[in-house]
Image 1 (cartoon, rainbow, N blue to C red):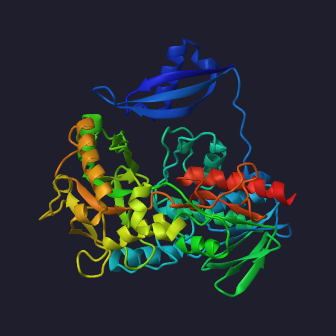
Image 2: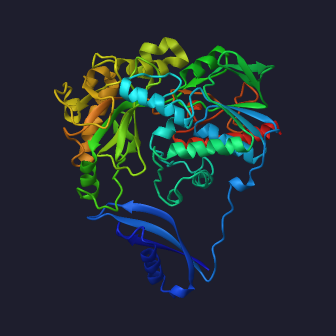
Image 3: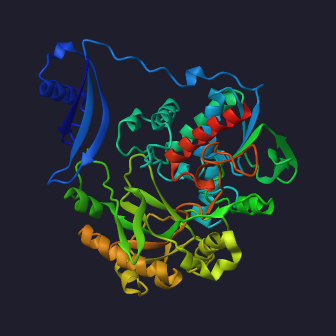
Length: 519
């Protein structure tokens, strides 16, 4: 017999297996010797009361033994001599598409303009310490994509996208903690993700797939309305049964290539704003009524949203105990993002705080048609550059209170952002419609979260890579581009995902569609 029970435990009790078992047995009023095993299948924090506690959903196996789930990877066979599918991009969409293809007996050949995770670290160090941006290897481009260095949050609100459990299990089989299978808001951490990504690479290679780094796709090979291959680095050509485009949201040159090839692309909604950084102890005080927080409690987080003058203003990619990092993909621009390590033990909490971009914002770029949103995004990023006057990746910033008042800060709080901050007039650098809604939005957030609106917080510009401003349309039934056979847009860059989990699931779904098409 299998029984489920829900428990409420103090933070100090929530990871104590004996305590969990005892409380579950007590609640069900059964004999302890009848319980052969227990398993926590869901864990979340409830901080609404005077003291936070954990809510656990626990399964007890009474007079029976739990079945052992077979390894997904154990079913993989060698595919080195099988039909070839080309994948552009080695992020979560590309890698999980490759795993799915191997599982179904096809050979994936992956091309990434960046470097593997080990070599990529050198270019990240160059951005952080010297302000040098490699346009092919940075926080967005390279093995694992942008997700490798943005905390590893594994959360999606859309449970209809695909098989969430399968993605999580594959991550565990490649080295992630099994706790991601139970946590309501699981994360891995940017210090652990590179090793997991490297193990996924090994799986692909060991089963006969190919991965080519420093391989920038410069042309798409189309014959008789069918995509048959790609050109790499302006010279080498590779052919396959189909092409999966999984390039991520910042591969602007790919959109231009598609446009030049007369392959239909279209503008899509996105959001733009700033990254706001608070002391983590302040957020803990607000959320937990504790400062410092209990040892067994994780760094607290928040999610905020409101409507200002007909548009949404909302927090995005919140990183408790995290770091602000430079996410520019070209020289002459400043872009910021957030990440956390697995322990989330930084002294800072940061979150993107953004406003929906509407057509009225794009009027100065309307003559660029489908590229108007991208040009708007790029123009703001370029305004943020060189505020310090030294050509570095220092980011313009204001105290939160000064930002709302529209005045330059004479000093700034400490920050996690390694390149450093420079006092800058974000109220002038941001488009007026974006700034006015942000300033009203953060005041509203201060009413929702008492203590949020403080001069201790930094407002840092610019958070602009929330999602792609361009979509590569595809048929909802075949997941293939309507105008080009054998061409499968996939993941964030194509406009069909918004994070590691949704991108990975889209990769799996596209791989299945590719198999159906080829067969």
